[in-house]
Length: 169
Image (cartoon, rainbow, N blue to C red; front, side, top):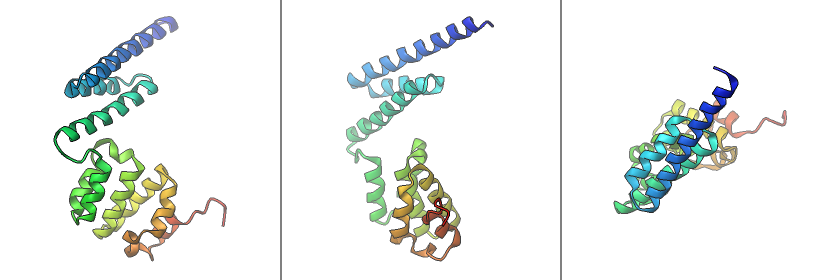
């Protein structure tokens, strides 16, 4: 395949993804959420340009909120997870935190690490905390001051995660 043919195929794939994104947005604004979700998922599955997949992901999150509000549920999954954790439903909160793309959201990953620490799951808690710090370095400071990690205060790995050694000291 020539370079021109490759460019043309790529351009057609981008055009197709853009049409799906536009159809999804139109369905979303017409309150056809299931149809919109299908279109946005197709854009992501096609692996089109990152700006298109990113936008489709944003709209998928909006679909989640729209569906949750119709069901009478809390329309903010993070708030729902925090409320479940505060109510003592640690397993329920953990399930919310680890669903789908939330495993790439520093807020959810951090909360999951807190919950795992409270459950006494040391290694999973540390693994989640490490990922939470990678996703958002401010989680390092949060963890240092967070009582949820009291059981890990003497753990060497925890201490290395909450102390920034990037300055060489």
